[in-house]
Length: 276
Ligand SMILES: [Zn+2]
Image (cartoon, rainbow, N blue to C red):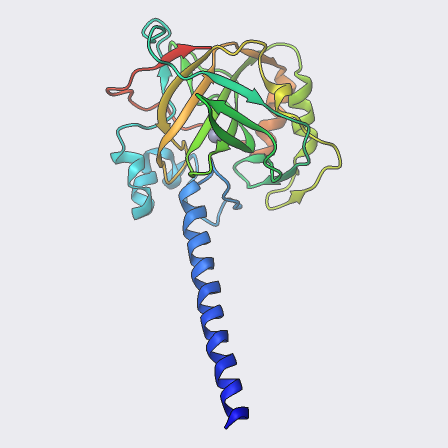
């Protein structure tokens, strides 16, 4: 009897383990979908049917999948136009602290975006003592946020995630001017071909992208890509940085030579804060 029992026990354990692995796989799959392009999902354009022109254009995102319903039904969507004369600079705006370090990176080209990703979780920001780990940096050409109706040639998004899963994105706007050394470092660190991954030997410090001051516009919004999930804390730096036309052209061509910006969304009842 004994020899017969042991295999039965082993196969029961095996089934439980297998079920756990399958469940974990589904859970990770579903949760990475929730994050979307602004989070950690990797994909090459063509895997999903959304994009920035034709049937996959932003105005059609909500019709492409039931999971994208927030893209049209959401009332706190991003990006927005920031009316700099209408911001609230008196209220309890969240304080922002950067703690970025030299870190190993991994970069990828999704066809719509080039991204630098962080795995070490040693760089973070603090918003009112809540910590958000740096997970990813990617540019949009042209900018997604606008200031008083003005668009900019480029906006860099520095994406962070708290342990709770909440996302906080720092947006940095760039006008045309001198070449930016850290933007060049970013360009040199990402793969040219869609679907490729790259592990540069050099570190990348997100602090090199930051303006000198901490003044920023703050509001609650969403991912700017499907599934347009809300509850994202946005911090758009008010000091505009400079980038050269050549660097903008390089970033655009790395991202499929398309304009990968979602149009601005209604502000609705939201108030944009301005603070340090
Ligand atoms: Zn973005």
